[in-house]
Image 1 (cartoon, rainbow, N blue to C red):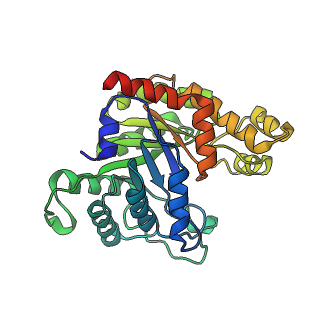
Image 2 (image 1 turned 90 degrees about the vertical axis):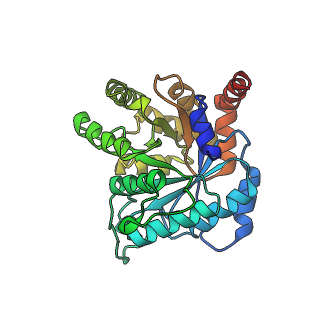
Image 3 (image 1 turned 45 degrees about the vertical axis):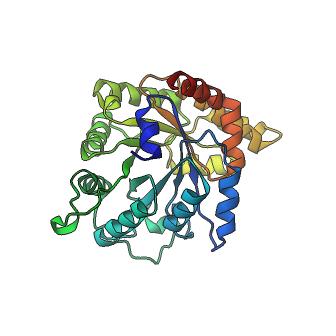
Length: 307
């Protein structure tokens, strides 16, 4: 098993954080980000053009594998690749010691990445997850081609806890888990009650026993960002109390970190939660969230128990 697989099988609380590759071609920017990230992380999840056109996620992931002793997860967006490109990049990632592939469909390109671009969408996220798992377990690729040596990758998918009705949400989630998702990263959580209702359904379905659920927290840097996300509903509802806290804070960034840390502390106590994922792509905010939430102490205690 690779590094991230070891963490997934350990039974302890997991810590992961998002990395947004640079918009330019500066490899030193990736190295600087890597050196500044806290050592408590079990994996860095490299985003794949989620907002604008950025440097190759694959190249950034490979650079991170050379700089860090923690796991590296490569996001791959079906929006931008057909199945030939998806399989080719996955094989290349495995050859270069990337630990896991996060299978995502991606936001529509008209939402800001590049409205003029044509999307591929040859496979959806569920089909991609299933294809990756078949390749890993059975060595079966396109047209039944067998791969040697055995490919060692974990496969992940995303989940949206606020999609309703809940029955439909669970149907989609079951498809991803049955397709072979070893872990699930959620959208950013701001509404704890709504997430708790979703986790109740996840536990009732037994899906928490079949995959590792890692809810995400996002440090909001400004009230403008908070209001924009509230209008778009891309992460589900953002309570007015959170908007008010950031709006009235003397330092909006620090208040956003405090809110994310508080949410992480609450999320880690919910039965079925296997870890915390920190969104945002800023190493200083990742470190601050971990420190303020006490997650590094909890991980250290569990590591000692497992030693």
